[in-house]
Image (tube, rainbow, N blue to C red; front, side, top):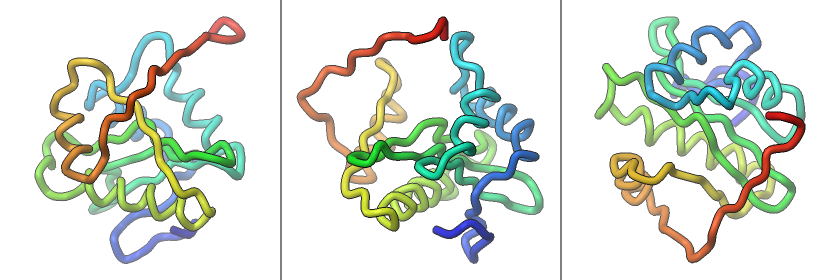
Length: 145
């Protein structure tokens, strides 16, 4: 997955995409008061180990995945598809693009987190071959965030 457009409509996000992505993420219920999506977006675009991939249709962003790696494992966040276009393969396409982006960088495993109770997302990822692992995710907020 390179930086430019491709035949599937997947491309790397540009800074100018921020408002459209924030609206998509909100429409999909992905935003939370303690996570500033604009800050998350800027952070993902700032370094070589992360990006935001989007699918565009008729000049409008209809799917996204924030993807990155820590040099060992990959991760995705803000995986979204326009609720009005669900069932058209956009989620599968953006996840395939995220997996390709990681594989091109030598990353061999992708981890993702799904909020408890989000059975729809769990079913979606299971259909893509993802499985639950026997681990606990621990976190600590740093710097007041």
